[in-house]
Each structure stands twice: as C-alpha cells, then as structure tokens.
Amino acid sequence: MDRRESTASQDTLLSLQQVDPSPIDTPPDLGKELPELPPAPSSSSTLGLSGGGHSSVYYLTRLQKYSTYAFTIFASFHITNTSIIPLLTRSVPASERYLLLTRPYYQSFPLEPLLITLPIATHVLSGLALRIHRRNANLARYGAANISVSDRFKRRLRIWPAVSWASLSGYVLTPLVLGHAFMNRLLPYIYEGGSSSVGLSFVSHGFAKHPVVAWTGYLALIGVGVGHFVWGVARWQGWILVGHDKKAKRRWWTINGAAIAVSLLWAAGGLGVIGRGGKVDGWVGRGYDALYSKIPFVEL
Image (cartoon, rainbow, N blue to C red):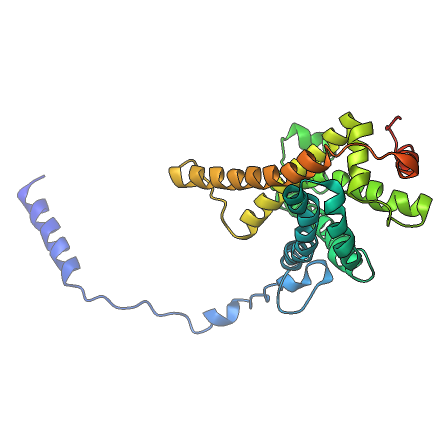
C-alpha cells in the first residue's frame, strides 16, 4: 500500500467518525401491515373446567392433597386403637373395650363415607387422572398422538411420566387397603349383617390360625402404608430435595427414619401384642373360622 492509499483510508475513517447518528425513518404504514396477534388461550378451558383461571391439574392436585386430610383423622383413631392402646395395655381383651367405644363414631353414617370411603376414592382417582393428563400432555408435546404403540417404543418416547416412590407405594397400597376393608368390613356384613363382632380378637385369631397369610399381609400393609403416608406428607410440604449433596441426603435419611419409626410403633402394638394374642375358643372362635373360610386363598 502506497502513501496515497493510506492517507485516503485515514480520511475515510475520520469522516465516518464525524458523521452524526440519525434515526432511520419508519414508514408510516408499517404498523398497518402487521396483523393483530390472537388472544392467548386460557388455561381454564382444559377439560372443560373454568373459574379462577386454573387448569384441571390445579384442581386434581388439590383434590388429591386435601382428600388425605379427612382420612388422616380416621388413621389417627385407627393407629391409636390398633397399636398404641394395645402397646400400653399389653392385652387384647383390655384393648378391645377401647375399640368398641370409639369405633361407632367412624363406622357409622355419615362419618364413615366422609372420613374413609370418599377420601380414599378421591385420592386414588385424582392421582390416576393426573397421570393420564400428563400422559396426554406428553403425547401432544411429542406429536405422538397418532403414532402406534410399537413406533413409540422404537423411537423410545417416554409417554408416561416417571413413577416416584410415593406413587409406586400408592399403587401397591390400594389393593392392600381394599383387601383389609373386605376382610374386616365387607365380609362380615355379607355373612353376618354387620361387623360388630369383628374386633381385635378377630385379628389375633387370624394370626394364630393363618400365620403366613396374616403376617405377610399386615407387614406389607403397615410398611407400604406408613411409607406412602410419610413420603406423601414430605412431598406436599416440600421437604424432598433433588440432588446428591449433604443436605439432600440428610433430608432423605430423615424422611426414611420417620417412616421406619412410625412403622415400628404400629408393628409393636399391632403385631407384637394383637398378632400374638392367640386364637379364640368356643362358638366365637368357630364363627371367626367360618368367616375366614370365605376368604379366597385362605385354608383352614
């Protein structure tokens, strides 16, 4: 580059630096050429629910959460009658009197459907509805609504949401609770017209006559039930932390420690006292045997 070209370049750079900035004029009709944006769809239209601007997930989540509050009232009575009082009295007949005093309050209309039947049904059905709703949302997100199931597997699409420990324990707990209700409430109602004769001695008689079925069923019911309850409370309260740091691990051990402590308390009275109460003799025992003979997979 010679001296003349260098001087010209410097003059051009100097002239550019001295030019005052000025805005570019916007065409007056530019705003008219842009179409108006359509209004954003309201989330309240999901599944036809409206009011307050909330989606169906909002209502289903609260139904699942608040339904546990009513059932907790019954659960507190039940663990007191079947664990704490037997643990204090160390006697099935002595504990039976307290059960007979309090049971009419939560086994009569309308308290039984309000505290037990409706809350459990609401909790289970709302949880299933939430999983189906999230599954449909995943189908829409991946555009897989019209894809066959085999193609979804080939593409490795995760359509169903992940199952947490709380959800898995809930699915396992549901048949256990239904079986417990069938044995202690529905079966006596079908064959005896009511469950007034079924109490703690009926349970202790079952442990003595059918130990394998009784111990397996009640251990599963207590372990899975308490675990589901404790982890559910921790989830609703926001105590579960995601990660592998010390705080998350300490929180995980605390929640599991609470579940183990409550399980041991329930098992100490329910299994340690009632489970070892022995069989009932006489015509009462024969009546219990007749009821147990109606239960599938239980042999005398």
